[in-house]
Image (cartoon, rainbow, N blue to C red):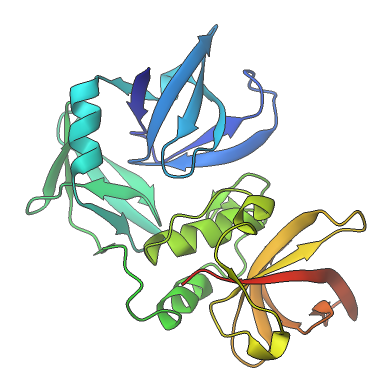
Length: 259
């Protein structure tokens, strides 16, 4: 098996090995992947943080040997804590943007090495920690208000509901699975809405009983979630009530406590 590291700001992961194929996920700078197979100019990869699989353009993954993978995997990791920060490639002498939740591994002073390249970073980083939960996660969530919905997305430029929750819980020290239905299998169940606390994850199903949506409970019976855009709505035992449409838009199925 081969390994790779993402050295670009953000890359798409597709369902099939074609540019026209559906985007099902995105990978951020510093993410590590296992490479299972190749087809034409495409690599079938598995993200090592959540085991999510898909196809990526081989030009967008830097293949590394086992020694470099093991080195990176063992280094302490910090995450970018602003929507956009700047990393400078010392080899290319060129700055480029990195996004909230990107991984910076083994930073010493303001420098780190990855995939045979040297980088400089002077922005704000956060160690993954549940300290201050849930206030910290909800404060981070508010940074994304009005970010547009994008299927498979995981950045301020576009995100889906489970990409939103996965990104936020990553900084709280919890690596969630990728899709809402997968995330619903994690954590401990909360039986009643009256027992739910801010920071709990709320899952919603469709008419066929399939879990298709997730959000994070806030205080005062509110929920923050990505639906059309990242937004705050009212929520109760029935589901999410959208005051703009004056109707319930999502039917509550499960409440889970991760932290």
